[in-house]
Image: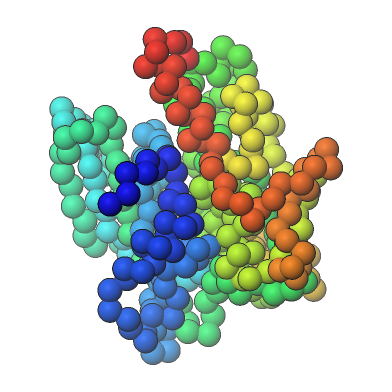
Amino acid sequence: MSSESLTAGKLRWDALRSIIYTHLGQADARVLVGPKIGEDAAVIDFGDRVFVTHSDPITGAIEDIGSLAIKVSTNDVASRGARPRWITVVIFLPEGSSLGLLRTIMGQIDSEAKRLGVAVVGGHTEITPGINRPVLAVTAMGEAPKDKYVTSSGGGKGDVVIMTKGAAIEGTAIFASEMREQLEERLGVDLVERARRFFEDISIAREASVAMEVGGVTAMHDATEGGIAGALQELAIASNLGLMAYEERVFVRPETEAICRVLGADPIRTVSSGTLMIAAKAEAAQSIVYKLAADGVRAFVIGEFTDRERGLWFVRRDGSRLDLSEPIQDQLWIVMGKRLRERGAGGST
């Protein structure tokens, strides 16, 4: 067995391909979409409808963890064009946790599930030695008509890519919560409090539904780990296409820009659950953008798909290019890892 150490964040592609994807149990013809780099959720044939399911953990944040866990897991179902309907929740609590903490988490889960119209149908709760913060893992399930779901791999040459809301939404909220005192000293209480409220923007279920209603959508992806760059990369790779996208077209909220500048983080490569990436036919793009705006969601065309041979490129404001064919390590893990090392060495944060 290899003794190679793994770094924080998503597993490397080579390990996914050689270890995960080669051990998937019994093949089943009803699995229309299974595990694949860039794909958000599994799709299973149920006759005239499809069953869509996805699992997600919450490990990098503790504030409002119950609500956040429901949002990020249902996002991956919604990005298939499906309606989230059911969830199961696994809760790991550190030794010494109080019943009050559990009540708080379950209250958050209950409120968010009701807001999204999903039912909690099962799960597991335990007190787990060896962890120092709550960890939640949620499986979301939903359904869609068989002829009206999308995947991450449906993009076509000439399709444009639309982003909603802004870059690094989840990362900004986590930074503002986990590093609150440090950021308040540099940026002020009001800005940090506004950034913490970005947690409220993490669900993409409504905007995914609006885009599907307009039509012309060929693929969708929630910009989770790796942020905007990671989502662009995964859409292009899943669709076997090239890509040209432009930083000057990417909207970065002032709070995100300020916090990332202080922490030395790149908002383009910071986890951004709540940013929906929509691939669409060029002729449908403006209609989608206008309809989202009418629904209160800002949206921006930031790039387009090209031939695979032209590569996967993100053009920075200074004219340099970020090669999206290479794996991306999320900036959240880099910043938080540095913080933990400083704490271990007795440094201040």
